[in-house]
Amino acid sequence: MQIAVTFRHMEASEPVRAYVEEKLGRVKKYIDEPIDAQAVLAVEKKIRHSAEVTLVAKGITIKGSEETNDMYAAIDAVVDKIERQLKRYKEKIKNHKPDTGRARVVAKTVLAAESIDEGASEPVIIRSQSFPVKPMSVEEAVMQMDLLNKNFLVFTDSSSEEIQVVYRRKDGNYGLIVPERR
Image (cartoon, rainbow, N blue to C red; front, side, top):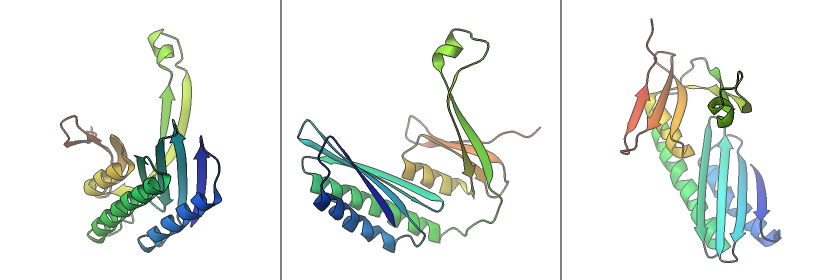
């Protein structure tokens, strides 16, 4: 497991770095694949200590963040949160068989709002990103969206091999957008 620890608004501390690495070592028992972990530790106004952890393994990304008045407590809380998410993920994965469908690649582009509002002939692209969209069921897509703390997720439906979008509604429920074939 590769762990990168970033310190913001605080001195880089070897005991804190070792503590993060020790605590994140506990999550190995939930995922067998190689794991990349990014931990960001920050102190704001000398009293708010926050820890944010992002784990990336094959096919899954999990994020968690906690804020307390003690850095060690924040690290403990965020690792506990990540462990709970991984346990939930692993239990749900047991119920699903892996699909061998083909993955697609989707491009995400962010446009500058001013270029659209002013009626420019070409919108200004701020950022463009491509990422693979693996086939999964709607239940897996909702679970992945929850693990990533996102409001929507684009995925390929494993049964129909069509690109679909699942999103979180304002009332707390989930919506599914299925493109209509013509």
